[in-house]
Image 1: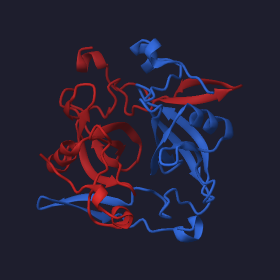
Image 2 (image 1 turned 60 degrees about the vertical axis):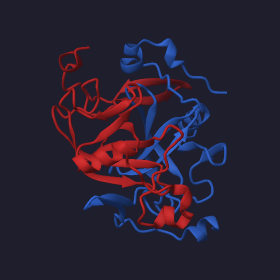
Image 3 (image 1 turned 180 degrees about the vertical axis):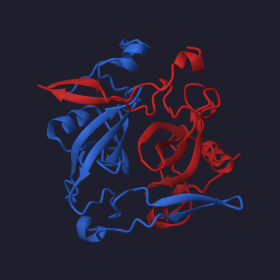
Image 4 (image 1 turned 90 degrees about the vertical axis):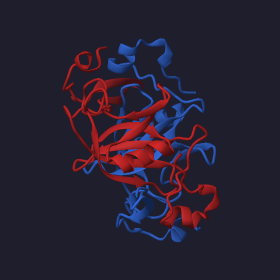
Length: 149
Length: 149
């Protein structure tokens, strides 16, 4: 089992300015992982990682998350072929979130709907009413062909 | 009090492809908000929003979060002057995360450490050892001058 430093044992200065990686996991043992495309910085998806997923991502060079719905380690693309090659992993000031910089392989679709990004809808307020509108990000493949659903 | 549609009342197709905004709040009533800079797409910070913060962000045109540490609504920049002008708000496929596209005003520092981005450290694995290294993102102001700490 992968062990990282416990953030509670670090001072605020050590946590925020130091070289010790001490991810601040939530009560479920997870940190938020924001995955962006290398080069464009486009946000592809938001997922979660536990200690094992972080270590596996660094070891394998492929983004690996913790699937909350399936309750297991999730190598992104293991079913769809949409693997994510790790370019860089970053952490934030208080070490409770990660940015995963990747090259999106396969069709170039990080989203299970077949789109490049999961963030394909805008939230708009018109005359006090809030609605969603598409950003124009169209599916690159048919999810039924890839996932059989 | 701001009310949005309950995602549990929507089908998967409605939730993922429809025009109804139905944010899937966690047990604390929060969704993850990833704030990026308009134009560059650079990830500035990761925070949280409750229903009121989302509505206030859309109404006011300035990014407003829920501060988990202070337990109250947090208009980003109200103390530091580092206000974030809303350019676009996006939601993801299952509506449990938001991307907040902003113009970062003030010194241009989203991070309380005075840096542009909270993600100023890389996680690196060398010979099996995991350490943090700076990305070169230097402070744009002295936090003591701005926050008095």
